[in-house]
Image 1 (cartoon, rainbow over the protein chains, first blue to last red):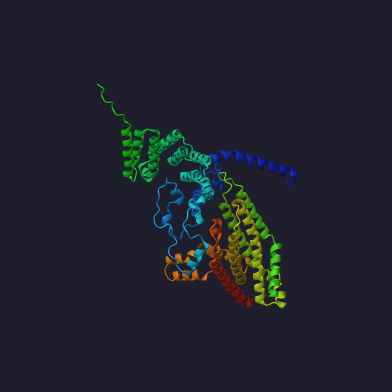
Image 2: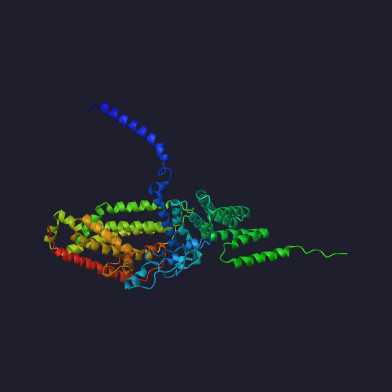
Length: 300
Length: 258
């Protein structure tokens, strides 16, 4: 038993056994629903808890948008329910109310009053100059991007991360190509996302001035939105209004005035301000009336 | 004073003989360089995430150095049986305590200097600016905060049996103060008496280490803090340092040397 030859043979037999067992188990493990082997590094390390971290990093990006002036779990967060960096893109429903300037409230005691000198204590937005109020420094909004990218890597199923990131990349940093790539990455992960299609349409329309592609993408976004159930539709009215009003504007610019009116009628059904849209419809109708040629007078 | 600085000198020499600082510094540098190499939307000017990571590592490293270095000072002297000969020389117990304190504090200061020079270089490489006064304020405030930590740990090393238990307790207390210290009075309002009174008393008693955390101001390039508030904060820290050192002297006076 002590001979090296027997030990060597035993080791070899064990290795063959292990190899065979691994070969047998590997396909079963790959097809097992709880397997993490097919995911990226975050999926392997964090599993489903990565979504929680993704949300934290998304909020972190908003804290950077405010240059560190941000409520903690102990402060009044009513004015920060919806992240301001997302709200400022104009495509997100806002749940914010209350005073965003003074979530710290009145000074509670001398320690609180003294402590306020040592952390950011003024509400600013990075795209409006940040703490220095220097509007020429609005490109500093780039500082939110690492956290947004990390958030998207951790939770690729959240469309808002892609739309917010693409908006700031395109609007303030003039990085249209990067925004385009990022939105397509988001679309691959969320093929049914009307939010991403809407932002992609804006990119084609406003940055590439490619109205045909913008129209196609927005119409596809409308079709995706229509497939939602009634509850989901009532929760996402703002984005539908945005898509349809943008389509109306596009058709108006292209001279397809009846089509523009159709889109505005569709927007009116979900809008909080149907009167404003009605005024636009009236204007377009006046424009249409002016375009109808006057019948020539009889010569004889 | 001569005796105090002689003891302090020995402590500083001990820090640069040990590998703790070098290991932590190299880890900080490596992590920061790896993070700096990440390409984020082809924009090389993005800097603040890097500053945040670097400052976080500096804070963690400095706390580890301060607490672990201080916690083993007096227990090591007792274990090596060098405490008795030290006190047999013309060295009083308070002089030993103050010497150990200044040694650990200056050692932390030297470590901080290296860390902040690296931080400044890293930030300047991205932002192309060098706000020296801002960094000076942050480093001085950080150093005085470490002074409170060192004094507290020194007192703990005389109260608790082993350096490991002392270090753990100090980490928990300091972490607790840094995370919730500022909000303890808000937490107290949701409690019933007598717990509310106890938490309120705690709020006014603990050293508010969060005053010295200027990371958010440095990361987001906020303007300088008025110097009068810095001076007041340093005086506040000095008061706590002396309170803890006096406490340590009182405990050590009645402590058997062997």
